[in-house]
Amino acid sequence: MNVAYWIVAGLLAAFYLYGGGVKVLHSRDRLRPMMAWVDSTPMPAVRAIGLVEVLGAAGLVLPPLTGVAPGLAVAAAVGFAVLQIGATAVHLRLGDRRVALNLTLLIAAAGTAWLATASL
Image (cartoon, rainbow, N blue to C red; front, side, top):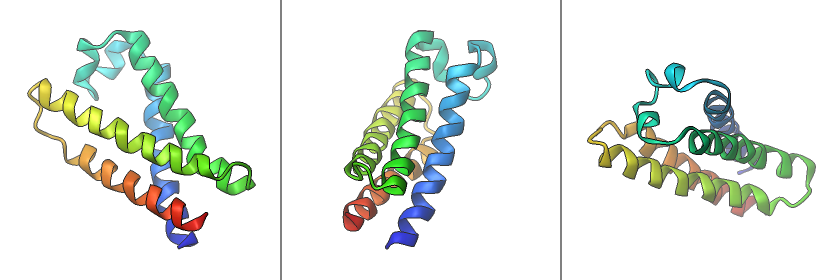
């Protein structure tokens, strides 16, 4: 179980660390080709989502690694699942039916939450 957690959580953390970092650092013009939804979202909200993703990535890795508050890993994984439910809703509201990545991330986050719970 422990190895499975680290594989799934590591991949999920890497994805969100990159995606969140991009949202925090790049301008709307640089984000637009990758994320069409940024046109309908205020940039402070885009930056806040990016910051939440970066902090969540740290939450998946640091608590189990250090042994300090390992329950935070479960909270981070559940937070990512909730984030993807919202992201899927935004994509569908904007008429974008390409939600396979969102659903994959939702499943990965739910699996990570389950694995983290089993590891506690």
